[in-house]
Image (cartoon, rainbow, N blue to C red; front, side, top):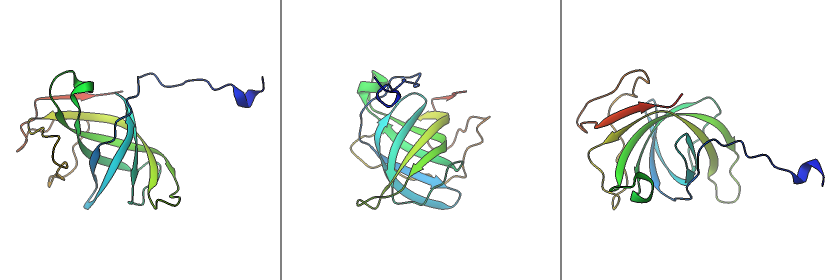
Length: 141
């Protein structure tokens, strides 16, 4: 067996293969993406936005009941782009992000596309209680 045939799994959290619409915000720039998979620590998504490793983003998406073990739940996440795979024939770049901070919102409704927040990005060290009335906030470090 050669070294190229052996792959070491480095992920610490289980990945879920879910395709969800995601609202993306970087400063005043807004866009849309969709997930390929997600875990407690990150996600891989596809977007038309031009992103670079190190970019900080705000994402809003509805987590399905299969992950939350309750009802569908809207979540706002502060993430950092880890790597970007250039767009191929689909014209969408693949983007791996690390979830740095997240908050569950009261307005979960998985039948609609997540709306893009009109608020400035969250400070990762504080919770934000606004129109959405955050239920819980957390940080993954």
